[in-house]
Amino acid sequence: MPTSKKRVKKETETIAPITKNIVKTKWGRIVIVILALSFVLSGLVGLIYALVLAMQ
Image (tube, rainbow, N blue to C red; front, side):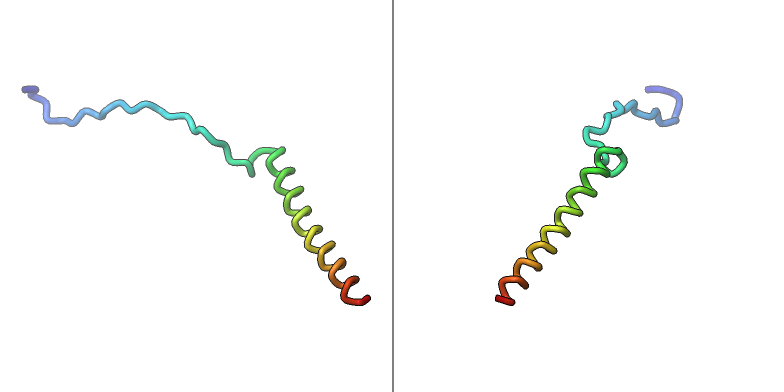
């Protein structure tokens, strides 16, 4: 039995992150902006189309 009463820290392996945050990359921001604009524009086009059909 050891004479020292100090606890020895266990060595843990450093695990590299598997995924990256898409917001922190240039291309990720571009993709998010394109998706948001396409979502808004598709809703706007659908609304205009519905209004044109309602007027006829």
